[in-house]
Length: 189
Image 1 (spheres, rainbow, N blue to C red):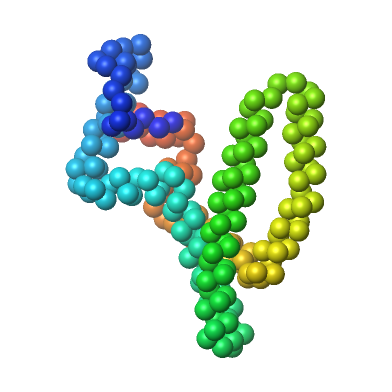
Image 2 (spheres, rainbow, N blue to C red):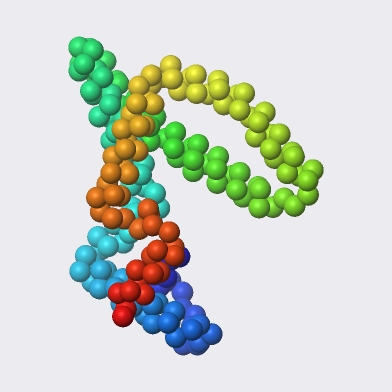
């Protein structure tokens, strides 16, 4: 659940009138915390919030993991500088864009289409189409593998880096909504 106030639109003074007192207090406390964070960081707050909430930070971690893995494998294999640079650049590029395309694009597209279907026939067509699409996807991944053979290792390093970072910073990304609300309620007492 995300209770951050929107700066772009206002709903009027009675927008929260139908909510219980505890929820209104929680919203007011979170809004005050958001305002304090925005005041302390200035323009950087919006950039930081965008990076965290949009998933861009995940893609940056996967790109950095790909670059690190390409560098590590190239140095380990004793490859010349041109191959090293190529492995670093290609692996970083692929490990960044595969999650964007496959997770961001395919999963988002599937969820949008799936929400619009109700009948058994429509569901069958979606699932059958998804299964049939796996065959050309195997050819796509063969091309990806030929272009950047180190991408999977870089992908693993990048995701490991991202999840280590979320654990280290105790990010809300790893917490359920109920745990977040319980924590906010405990802080308010």
